[in-house]
Amino acid sequence: MKREDLEKLQEERLKKLVKYVYDRVPFYKKKFDQAGVKPEDIKSLEDISKLPFTTKDDLRDNYPYGLFAVPMKEIIRIHASSGTTGKMTVVGYTRPDIETWADLIARSITMVGGTREDIIHNAYGYGLFTGGLGIHFGAEKLGATVIPVSGGNSQRQIKIMQDFGATILTCTPSYALNLAETAKEMGVDLKKMKLKAGIFGAEPWSDNMRRDIEKLYGIDAVDIYGLSEIMGPGVACECLEKNGLHIFEDHFIPEIIDTKTGKAVPDGEKGELVFTTITKEGIPLIRYRTKDITRIIPGDCACGRTLKKIERLSGRTDDMLIIRGVNVFPSEIEMVIMRVEGVEPHYQIIVTRPEHGMDELEVQVEVNEQMFSDEIKAMESLEKKIAHEIYSVLGINVKVTLVEPKTIARSEGKAKRIIDKRKI
Amino acid sequence: MKVTQLSVFVENKKGRLAEAVEAMAKAKINIRALSLADTADFGVLRVIVDSPDKAAKAMKDQGMVVKTTDVIAVEVEDKPGGLNNVLKIFKDTDINIEYMYAFVEKNNENAVLVFRVENTDEAIKTLTKKGLKILKAEEVYNI
Image 1 (cartoon, rainbow over the protein chains, first blue to last red):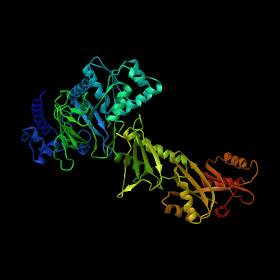
Image 2 (tube, one colour):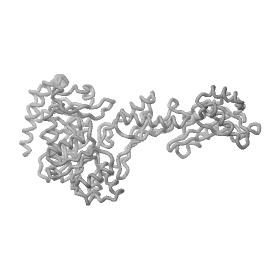
Image 3 (cartoon, rainbow over the protein chains, first blue to last red):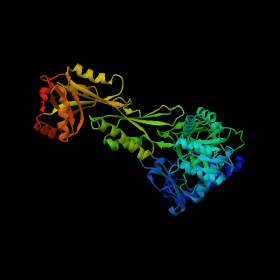
Image 4 (cartoon, chains in turn green, purple):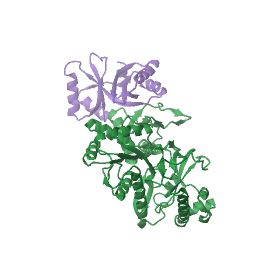
C-alpha cells in the first residue's frame, strides 16, 4: 500500500473512531469535553495531538468493563493482564475484533514466509494471557495447522515438535532457549527438524538471543510485539530483514512522545510509544500510553513494506517487569507481602536469566520481629506462603528468601526494589 | 522454672554468625549453651546466656532480629541411657519436642538438656510429676 493511501485510510478510520468513542463511551465523552475537543475537530491525522491520552490507570479506574464501547452481548472474548495494584487490566473483543486480530497474526506469520502448508507449534500459554489464543486464531485464519501445545513440559514439547513435523515455532524467546536446552539434554538435534522459522515475543530480548536461537534451531527468528490493551501480539512484527518491527498502521496509529511533555518527538528519536486503535470495536483506546520506550526507524525497509518500523523495545517508563511473558509490577508483590506480614515490608526483587534458561525471580524479604520464629519450620513455611500468594496473584513461581534486616540497600530513604541482572 | 532462650535470625552468609557472637562478646555476655539450626538460605542461632536481657539488647542494637523463647532445662544423669530415660517420659506423656540441644558444662556431675516444647508450663508440671529435675532459670544462667 502506498504511504499516501495508507494515511488517507488512517485519517478516515480515525475520524470515525473518535465519533464512535465519543458517542458510546461516557469516559471518553467526559475526557474530550474536559479537553475541549469535539469529534468534528479531528479533521486530519495531525489533529490526533488534540486528543487526550489514555493510561493504564484509566483502565483500572473503570475496572472491569467501564471502557467497553459495546454491550456485553457483542463481546465474545475477554483477556486480561496484571495491573499495578491488584486489579487486572481487562479487555473485550467483538467478533470483528477477533477477526482483525487473527488477520494481523496471519499477516505476521506470512512475514516469516508462513503459508497454509505450515505446521505451527504454539507454545505460548493459553488462557487470559493473549499469546496462546492470539497466535492460535491467526494461524487457523491463515489455514496453517496449529498444534495448541501451550506452555510447560519441555520434554514432551520436543517430542511433539519432532514427531508432528512442526515448521514454525511460536513462544517467548526465553522459552525457545529453554526448549533448546532440553533438546540438547535429550540428544535431539533441533537443526534436523523441519522447523524453518520462529515468531517470538511477549518479553524483551536481544539480538544476541536471536543469534543463539537461530543457531541452535537453524531457523529465522523474528520479534512480535503487542499488548493486550491494544490487541495482543500482532500490533507489530518483524519482517525477515530483522531490523525493526512493522506496525500494522491500518489498525493502529503509533506516536512516539516525550514522556514528560507529552509532545510528539520526530521520527528516529526515542520516547514513549503511544497507540490509537482505529478499527477496534470492543475497547477502542485513544492515545494509549504503553510505557514502552522505542523509536521509529526512519527510512524505507528493504522488504518493500511501507508500514513504519519501531526499534525493538529498549525499556519502560515505569518499573514493570516482564517475566516469562507475564507483566509483573513490584507494587503487586509488595501488596502480597504486606498482606502476609501485616506490615510494610522491606523487600527486593532480583531478576536473573540463566544462560539458555527462563527468567528467574527472587524476592528477598527482610525479616522483622513479628515474622521471626525460633522454629525453622515456621520460617520455611512463611517463605512458602509468600511464594504461594505471589503465585496465586501473578501466576508465576518465585523464590522467596528471608534476609537480615537492613541488608537491602536503601537509596534516598526508599529501597531499591528491583535488581535486573538479565543481559537483554 | 522456665528458661529464657534467645533466638537470632542469621543469614547463611560469611561472617553473619560471627557478628552476633561478637555483639555478645562486647557486652561481656557469657554463652552457656547454643545450637544452630540451618537451611540453605538462613539459620536460627539459639543461645542461653548468663544475662538474656543485656544480650538481646546488644544484638538488637546491631540491627539483628532477636526473639526470646521459653525453654525447659532438664538435668540428666551423665551415663549411658540417661537421655533415653528422659525421652521415654516425653513420649509416654505425649509431649512433642520442637527441638533440643545440650549444655557443654555439667551441673553437679549431671548433663543438662534444653527442650523447646509447645506448651512449656504444662510440660514442666508433667515432667516434674514424673520425677525429672527441672532447673530454675538462675541455676541455668550460672552453670
